[in-house]
Length: 283
Image 1 (cartoon, rainbow, N blue to C red):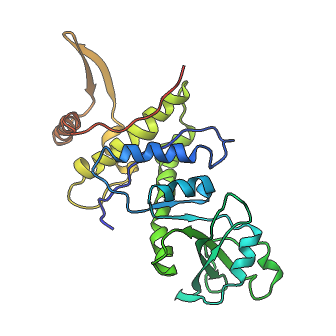
Image 2: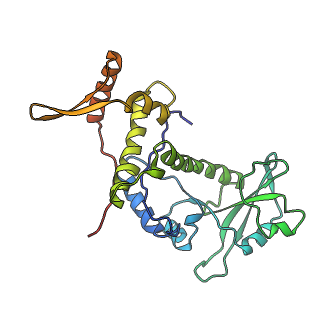
Image 3: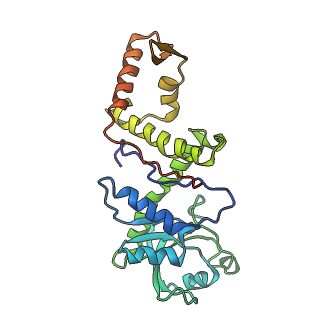
């Protein structure tokens, strides 16, 4: 992957901690899709975690003709179906993949859909991802496996390709981790719920990503936020005035650094686009 291919937050909802993960999934997706339509990006496929494993959302993607791969919640009927998979393909030491078709015994699930299962043998892969399913513990030949399960409407690709296509989705978790730890958002809160979402989740994160790619390091690897913070952001300053204009006076004596900061500010002022912010409060 290109070292400068940064991940931008296109859409993110700030919600209370007791909100069901799949609540408003269709509305969230439509809002995101609308935002993407404003920039020159084409959606090749949709990758989702288990919070989006809802038949209403799956049917919505299918109605739009979008290819999806998402983590499936491994309910007991699916565990039994995984155990009946006859063909497992080895893709790496201790990792095998297989697929099958399954339809939930629920009238909403109106047709069979394709599932891809990944099993990892813990004795060979002690750090294996996936879950040790409760039904599998009862069987000697299965109890040492961790299982991951995906549902997809890609009927042509091999199970291995489906698994590998889904794996980059883990970058989303890294972005969330960065927001919480490097940006300090785990402890950040403004008086207004919507103001927190507008200021932090959209504008600040995306601006830093843009500046990292275009301004701070155009030659190679992106710098971490910790490095950027110590070099450019943690600077003593005094807010004053010059005539009728407000002026922020930075405590920078190094001429080279002062010139660099002046250039960065001018580049920000000439940004060719505005960052997306859809935080709205209804009165």
